[in-house]
Image (spheres, rainbow, N blue to C red):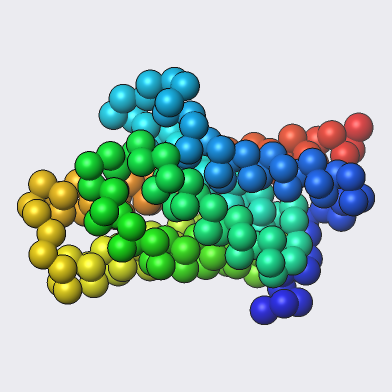
Length: 192
């Protein structure tokens, strides 16, 4: 696992690595905590924030290296969302129980991109499809376990069912598309 995490899509210098990591942390932590406070996003809040977060997770896989950094970035979005209390508002208590599944899902998402796209050179769409399905399945499995061991009010169950299921697929897919645009623009700039 450590060898997989030490590869990057593009080798960067220390200063570039610091800048890239800072931008990723902004996407993974600052956006979920503060974006909704600054810009009211209404019913699209989870989609927009989730897409940015997923893009940040993918960019972590592609442009950074190291186990500690990967684990830290994989855990930031859920901690940020809980701290901000904005996306799930009154169901934050129940979403807190989802943290382990979200961490495992995020880490798996990063690892699969790192393993497939960066290390094994599997094409981007195939890498994305596999990573998206695995991440969404892990998070939805966590939700399923939670509702089977806890008493969850029906409105909360319905909201989380969507948030931890279909919405995960949508945000992971749109995040993958956004990250792919970054990859393409990086390749174009490197050829100039």
